[in-house]
Length: 291
Image (cartoon, rainbow, N blue to C red; front, side, top):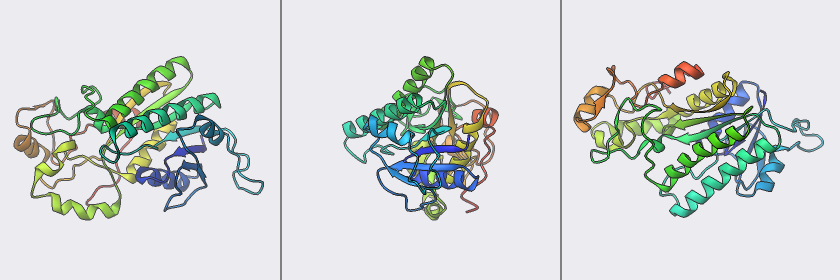
């Protein structure tokens, strides 16, 4: 499991994932529409809405003198490419891009013989943005929480999970692992956290969650190697929240009527990573107190 195609390797999560893979001695190809500002691996410009281009990229071998000249069929595909949030473009553009590109990546990977696809789903599938008028059903929010997409973006991710389930059913020897990523942060982003502390409403929309990009990269590496065949999904967040005050206090203040399924200790995440810990062996290594 050493030759990895990463779609969207030029984005925020993608840059961290590509760097993490390269630092762990993987051969990585970034396929995206724009080159990365952190170019740690080869880049191949591909429009993921064009199935032929995606199939071509999956079989890319580089030029005659390229170090990956024999990099024909990847061992796995990490699909991170998407319009990454609601409201960045018109809803129909977000929906069409994210659904079609995900289908093309899944289909192309299977066509060329890839057996493992790790891909970015989203915390937004669980009902975000949360608010006092649209609270979570319970906390810690886990993988059994109702799927409640509230935007074209989150609906595209919800349908991506359904595509993974059905395409895996058609190809029972494959593995599709969806990572429901929380709000991705780079170390430079942590400077903003101080400005959030006086108003817990500012980050209530995802129960004050986040994921350090470097831990996102760790989760991807764990997903590449976990002994699992089938389609499954995991919430991937950091072990703490973006707030200095305790999580139980935050819930009592903002969501007093929401059920707390188990005791929450200190600043513990309210986006449960218990399943990721248990199945993937994922354990966050970074947080906003240590950059």
